[in-house]
Image (cartoon, rainbow over the protein chains, first blue to last red):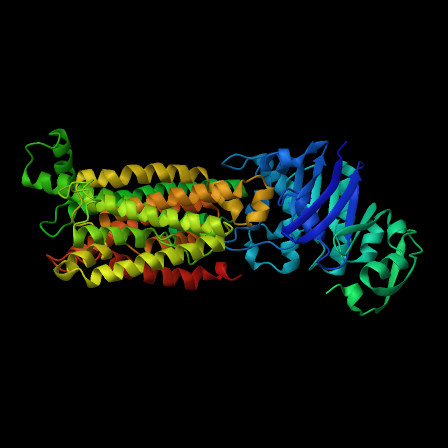
Length: 268
Length: 366
């Protein structure tokens, strides 16, 4: 069983500017875990710490009990996949080639039939099978997102981290992607950690929610019912809201009210 | 003809094939057409020159008879083909493919289409040291004999690598990001460029020799010099070919590449060192030849897409062919005068580039 443990992690991009403070998190069950919180709270930085793109100043990240600091980038890439919020598209390749890069650790200089099958499968799941020959930079922002998620899926890792996978997607696809990620997590028994801004989508699809508050601390961790409450949202986001039950799935439904514009809450 | 054109189009566009089949077909297409073009232009290089134009059979038979004689007691024609035109063709291929592969690698690592092999200051450093030798008889404080035929070349290599080394130190002291590499290269290049300008001002009657070197030419290439360029260029190119897959990966950005298992800092340093050493050897004997290293990679991307497993071999073939053709034009267009080959590469390359930019340039802006 895959486990992900974050122990006493502090991180800062430069001295005197600490982004994450004493983050502790122990994930021992597969599922879809959503990280929520206001802008600039350190959500993406946390995702980067877990995927060894940056190293914490103190503390450790353990995957299946192994400290990723002691693993090579290659070893980490075999257990953790990362899909960034934005993809660069200088000298872009075809969509198939772009997704194929996700197989980097599985293939040699050339691509094998199995790699291609995986790529086609991911394209079918993401409903972009017809885009295979298009160049990546010809696509819309939403299509970019779908290609990037497909690239994350073909990496076949036990932990998959997605930085705002539903940004730029239309409503239908936001729901489709979250449903898909939940299904993938359950079916494959992997841990999927995603950063999300839509509280209702988070409430409906995530198994557990991690709510961050300024300055880069975990405010609450638990099931959507435990975390997505009017009190928590007001405190962390600085916005009045009403949280009811969605009536169908028994999950919280957030109806947003007026924002509270004060320096203390905006923190800027 | 129409049928052939359709088939050619089908190979380039890859209609009705699976992805792997298409890659394989393009690879085969590249290997056969690339080799054929290189061979044809290579034979043209042996046949055509200002002293005499031979037919291909004559040129090849003289070449083989000279090889049979092991280079001794050759006839005038054999000397012309074996000792003059052959090494010149070899050097042109080596420099063409070297600059093109270096340019392709630099552009991928720095992820910027405006980058050429001289971005890390290699040309400015090489130029400065070469001018020091040509105009001021600099002999590295007596370490190298002033009569050595390699003096200018060695000075250029040392100068090129010195400038590159300073660029790397500066970039690493910054934060080793791609922008740091580019800006450091530009700044170091400017410093050496300033020194170069001052030296040219004080070079007196040597100024035309200095300018001839700076413009680039294959006029004085001998066998020794051709091999001195060819061997390191082949070694560096083979090493860079091995990184084709990683060059694709780095296009996604450094964070993503690092997460996918690439030690980005180490990879950047290796590729930049290989490409810069190769560039230094390319400019050592033939001077600074522009355009090829910037534009050939783009031509190849427009023709074959962004996958470096195709772009690198395509750069090899096209770089070699373009450079040989340019040299042919440079020595033939005005009989008895060698024109700067860099100017010719630009004149040949620009129309081809403009045509492809109009036809397929949308790949750069979506």
